[in-house]
Length: 608
Image (cartoon, rainbow, N blue to C red; front, side, top):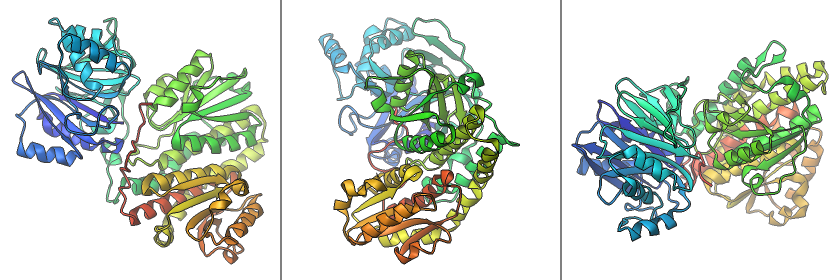
């Protein structure tokens, strides 16, 4: 949530900062601002609304040419979304300016204390307190003042700081909120995410909690809160700027839906070698994995739905008990964790606040952590005992698509890997499953080739005021994910339910004004889904069925059928969800919604 960009070098800072903010728009925001250093003075422009509104302001009221600056997109947490509350913020003297992601939990206490010392505040934000606190501690050494201020803060923060006291540097620091540094030639960058600076730097340093970086145009020095220098590894980003562009698609979301066959192919080619499954970066020893008796999957949002589907598959293949917890619930309940348990944490960004907090609780209990993540070097990866990367590439659309199928694909392979390791499934059966899994990219592409017919179904149903999604067994989580996609981007109320629960409440909602999406692909419980369809028909519900190609029976009961290719039932969510993503996308487009940046949502939820 929110976005930070900072630049120091030889080029014009303003243009780099504005372009960087544009590349972070997917994170969600309600206002934007920029601060630059010129002749040892800080000049600021900020505006409520979109980055284009800030750009128009800069055209009317240009900033002086500068080589140092910070910029920010704000998502309101404390104080209304208005110009006064937008970042950057200044201290009383106008010589210290900061941008901030996160939440300062004790800001009211600090604000009252600072007001007693004569500080005057211009905004309602928690962020402004930090600028004044640094001013309060400043005694000719900016770094020392920052360190003293950080020791007083409670909560989460990523900070970018410039000051007239030290005009040749940016200070960057973090705790529980992501912040990276990009290395360049005679220039360096800070940002909250890689896409902001990818055009200029592929060499990235990931700050850890309670670290402070002093960034000049030709040097990066990192210290801990005690002032001790820290040696940081440099990670090279493998994807390029084109991967973070629309490439002719009207929206990032549609582009990312269409990238799923390519992502699936990459997972297959990098993970399946011969008849074996390989996780080179796993790190957890096979002997430890052989003795697993329980798995706890923790995740949020879409990743949670991937975990739910993974539970069905892993339990079926291995006989290992799997529980799935929302990270935000796992954190706050009394935990009963049996021996020989592994926690599998799933996060696209590796920076999801609740998931990171849940992982830290599990680690305190001595539990091994295996993360499934898309971002190399992210906080989750660094805090895990082992990792399996999804290698899905950058996902810019707020509503997750290819990250979901990548996470679920990794869970499928993890289930097969553990089944082989524990010998709970015969080798011949595993080979059959792998043969089916290898078909996924081609079959996903067949669904995408059917895009026009799904678009037509969306066109006939975009006016419905609410949707119900029904699925059974491993496709119950698919129903949840389909409903989430629709509500995220179209704002239509949508619920996902296990179809067997329909008589326990949801059936009361069914009438001719509600659309019902039934996932009825070939499986052992197909007849049960058909029974549900009959019950919906009897109550005049408008049904859209996701059915297997060649299913002639379903067409006797349902007018609107989206056909998907046949595949082993365990892998059917990897196909069914693609159809549901396209359905949600085209309904949202028909309703005129901002698909890539839905209201009130952020791509990476880095605060509670």
